Image (tube, rainbow, N blue to C red):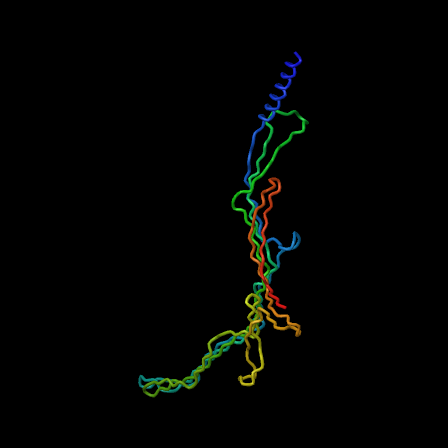
Length: 271
C-alpha cells in the first residue's frame, strides 16, 4: 500500500510539472541592431575628422576696352579701333582632407525568444518567470575604419591673358593682332603632403629657375635608414593601416561576442 502511494505521488508530481511546462507559449522578435560612426578608442567621445578648404585670397577680373574711331563713309567702314582684353586670376587655398581618428560600424541582428506563462495560470501577486534566449542571425558585421593620415596642401591658383588687336578699315577692314598672351587658369601646389602615399612637395632653392626657387618633389614614406648611429641598425618605418576581419564567438549562448582583429607590418629592423 505504501508503494502504491509513493508511485501515485510521483505520477501526480510529474503531471503537475508537465502541466506547468505546457501552460506557456513562445514568441520571438527579430531586432536588427545597428550602429555606425562609433568611436574606436572607447565608449566616450566621438570620431574626429578634418575635411576643409580655406580660401586665403582670391583676385579675378576680366576687362574689355575698345579705343579708336570708326565711321561709315559711302557705305563703307573707315577708321581704326584698338581692342584690349585682359584676364587675371591670382589666389591661394589651404586644404586638409582625409584626416580621421577612425570609427566602427556594427550590424548585430538577433532573434530574441520569450517563453511566457499562459493567462490565468498564475495568481495576482505571484512571481512569474519568463525564460528568454537569443540567437545571432546571418548578416552580422563589425567593420573598422582605421585612423588615416590625409592630405595637406597649400595651392596657388593663377591665370593670365592679354589680347591686343586692332581693326583697321579703309574701304575694307583688316584685323591686326598686336599682342596675344594666354596663360590658362591652373593651380600648383606650393606645399603638399600626402600622409597615405608619403608624397611631399615643397619650395626649394634653384639658382637656375626664373625666380630662384622651384617646387621639389620627394617621398618621405617609407622612412629608411642604414647603419643608424654607426651601430649597424638598418630598416624602414611607415604608417600602419590595419584592415580587420570580423568574427562571432557563440560558444556561450548567453554572451555571444562579435569582434574583429587584424595586423599591419609597419616596420622592419635589422641589426
